[in-house]
Length: 206
Image (cartoon, rainbow, N blue to C red; front, side, top):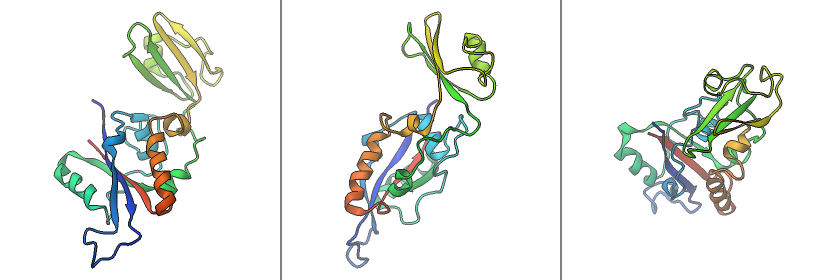
């Protein structure tokens, strides 16, 4: 069953005044459902440590909700409180400064298997110093080398399946061209008005 993400992008109101604005200094600017990435487990692990099968050093693992979360985020969170897990948050400054060249700890690469006869059949196999056991059981030892240590990155076919072994970094998971590019573009644009620490992403999962 896939894990889905919820939450939103908040901004810090530069004109906040407790006597004028009772709801708090942070305002929900955009609900994440408008930029929804259901089941994007690779990015969830990379950013938040959720469904982290690759062993990423997550950028912002489970910090909880911000103590001053916006009223818009709190309303959604409280409505389904018992269904959420792993709430966390990150400012645009933190996300902007991610080293996109980092790889998961102990991982040499990723094998992607796509069955051309059934485009819905798409599998990912993380590779360390030995070939992934599930990969070998289904497709045999890759013809790139007896071990990942000796193998070159490349592509090959097994029946109707096309397989590709490649180095995998944060750039592939969350960088330009990924689904998360839209979230980051919105946050970057808002930071032009509110500052890099005046824009933050708040998320939680089901």
